[in-house]
Image (cartoon, rainbow, N blue to C red):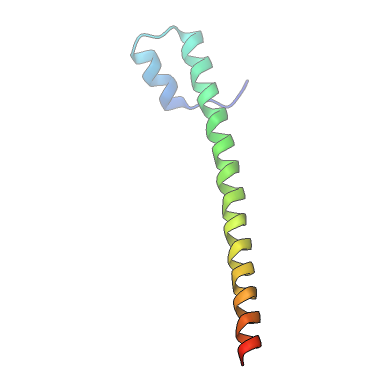
Length: 66
């Protein structure tokens, strides 16, 4: 069985959705959440790499003018 967002599942059930449809929807939302977490992690690494690159360029510019 896939990962499922339990609060989403419970809300869909309370709204009157059939159990199988509520389960499928909650599982699909969980997969999107996992994908977004992966994208956020990659974005954080890119931000660090950009910061290091900018720091390196600035240090080269300062070295060239001093």
